Length: 206
Image: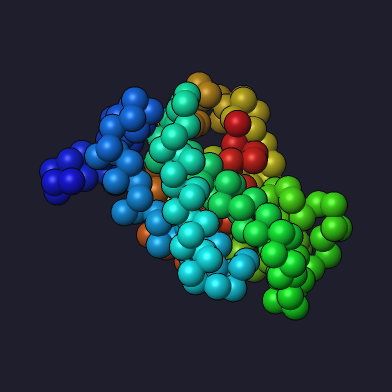
């Protein structure tokens, strides 16, 4: 993929989404290059094995490529989907292989056994959530007022329609502010904090 094409995707998320949704290999390669290391890192923190993490990340990207009906609005939504699927794959691996060691149990502290297959329940882990949320909130200072307000209200659990009503803005404008804010925050967050933000937005940012 040429540098000019990569820059086009970076500067024009809507173009990337259109190309990815129609099955363009250049758009897939852009996503793979941009997010594969982060996804491997995230999965490795669950399975505690780099080789397994790479295999699961490979499978997750393959699933994204083979989706018969892709409707991603932008790259951030695709990343959230990848984290969701990768997280479930990691938990399935541990369950099937019987590798629920102490590291994994610590990661899922306070979780009920029946909840571990639901990726969103990770956000209820107060230790993990408090640490990552603090990092995200600190990084909000790097945003403009409108973007900061949208992310803050999203973190409070409000959906797009509710935020639009509070800010007296069209829903699409709220989505645009959120997407731009996420891209800006990526520069100021650790990998895990950024993935936490994507997971939270994917659950509450409808």
